[in-house]
Image 1 (tube, helix red, strand yellow):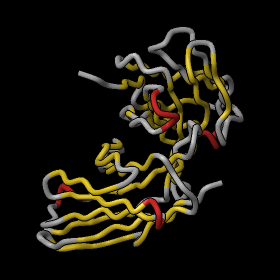
Image 2: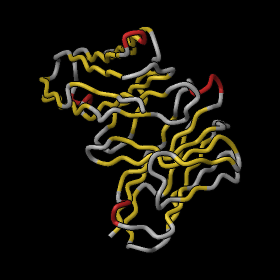
Image 3: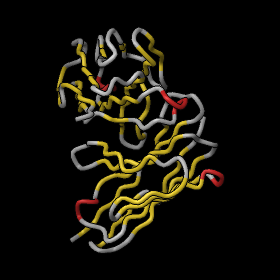
Length: 115
Length: 109
């Protein structure tokens, strides 16, 4: 089954404790992205990657890091989480055809709470 | 950047009623998707519809790209249709999907 998976699905942590949210897709997609969803603000893009070792900032990259060492994986790293990073996080992927027109596939979401 | 506006922001229906959700966007797009976010937070792809009309069961969608809007129709609504509906667009070669703020639908039995 074609899918995007995220782990963990739920996480409660404390300020300053480094964490990683994993994202994996089995569709051989080149493009992957991370979004965060906050009440009243909708979903906003954090980082994206166009292929292995190619990443770029989205609208709200501060406080986050990403890496793309393998095509299928795109982990989101919070080196020193703060309470304002409490949010619902989504990973998405798509193939590279047609300059952005292809369907985005979203993961199930990771609900993060930073105390 | 491009603006995406959804209306109405909230809608309460009785089971069996029909509804129309509207998405306006401020510039030309080459991708438009409708999502349903269920009460558990999952984003479910409903339609990929940069132009034209599509139907899937009780749901259908129409995008008029030249007039910069899209409509999502829900017929004979059910309680399981409750949740938040998002419209999202992208432009040109941009990787970013720009979301509207969503429309919260509540269907009462």
